[in-house]
Length: 262
Image: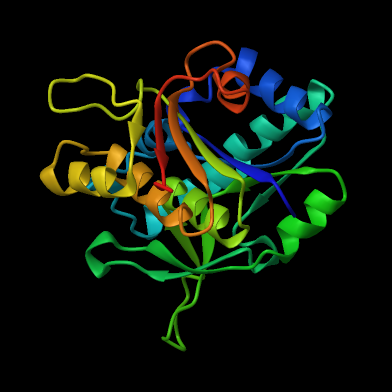
């Protein structure tokens, strides 16, 4: 599984099918190995409203009780995942949609009891990804994981896991060539709102510690730092721009690159 690129599709950029899916199919046809991880927070919120379930966020993560978890799993592993897979296959690509539960791909434990059934990744089982990649498919991963609970009577067997964290953990486990986040912002900015094109791991950590990188940017930056344990390059780019993914792969992208200093 050499030279795999992990791409995280943000929920807010999932509507950019016109170029994002085209780029994914083009890259596959060029012979590049891709793993796609997707979010879907916006659609989850819409469905929770339909179900009259309120949403509360702490540090960018949704508090997940049993009712919320049912909607999260249904939307992420069902509707969002299959829409992306269908879009790729309809354009001539080869993709298979899986959740972190399938093949015990993503194994986790409850991250913080106050967050409910929100998990932290404790293990990535690469076997399902390897099988799909070696068969010529793009794995499209929904960020739902198995609950490795210590409670023998635990009835909740699945966890809602932050998609950014999942992307970082998969990139680290697979020794990915690069990790790319497609987001709905220009990249990581300084306190004045100016884009920071390049950051060292230390600089990125300082932005989080100082609060300059805040909200949903925190898990993205942390995921990049996690991936850099075995990945050479990580990027956070504006997925709303035409062919943002293709341009980033070709070295003409914008956004922010977080890279270890040689």
